[in-house]
Length: 87
Image 1 (cartoon, rainbow, N blue to C red):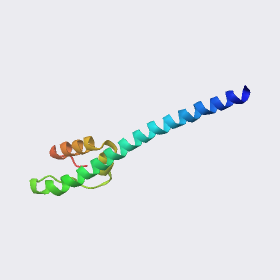
Image 2 (tube, helix red, strand yellow):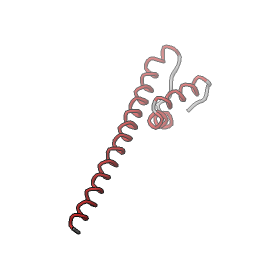
Image 3 (cartoon, rainbow, N blue to C red):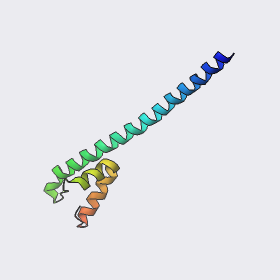
């Protein structure tokens, strides 16, 4: 009986680890996709926005903003650039 209880408890722990790994992987995957999309959007705005007079500097602040916040960070950087705030 004791061996079965120990095996059952380890099985529960293993299942909890699998669930935790799945949740962490989903979070990291979403974060990574959002970061890549943000940086790509920043580069696209710099490439295509030059003809419209919109240019965002590629420095630590703009890259960090677009990497951490993704598309929302790029939107914030564009709004600040249109308002004349230098990043």
